[in-house]
Length: 115
Length: 114
Image (cartoon, rainbow over all chains, first blue to last red; front, side):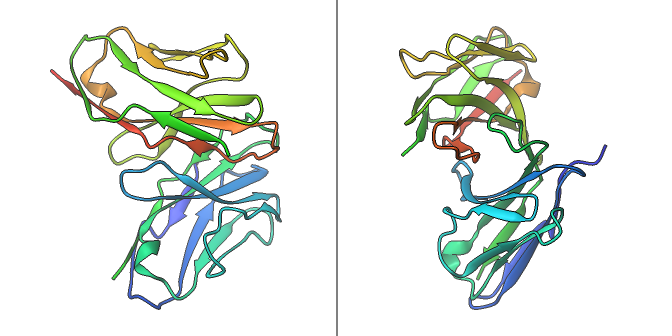
């Protein structure tokens, strides 16, 4: 079956531009996570949705970062006024249930380069 | 806060060699532990997991045992193959905090030479 998909796969933005990154989770998955992965590092948590509710946004690095999942399926991560330090791979993951310990399925990521 | 520490790579081994990748963790509660693998050009995949002390997770010849007394979850494989070349990430989720997100280590790159 279809896994988690993300688009675009690659994005180059000039500093100061706004970007929107899309995540299509596995159908029926309740939980959706966004992570940021800097080069040579492990992913770091950004935000978490249970259905359409954003239950945890403690990892968002600044108020330039905004995420939504209005109908409880597709999610968009928006970064306003991009900065060079925003360059990273942005990973989306979904999980069937809301409980702790359930496997998270990851998408291929969007590589954002801010010039 | 929670954290995961992995041995630095790259780890370079010959085919059929024994593999150990060390992982230790710090958590406020009683975490579940995971190993994820990222093959070249692919997304992160769950390799194995353990949810309580002394549990052993295993998959594709890889094993890791949840050691609460040493706060460790070392990954082992008795005989590696070239196809095992990838980046391996140790991770935890801490049920005590109710935080469902994963906390990852920085990853260990494994290169297996024929």
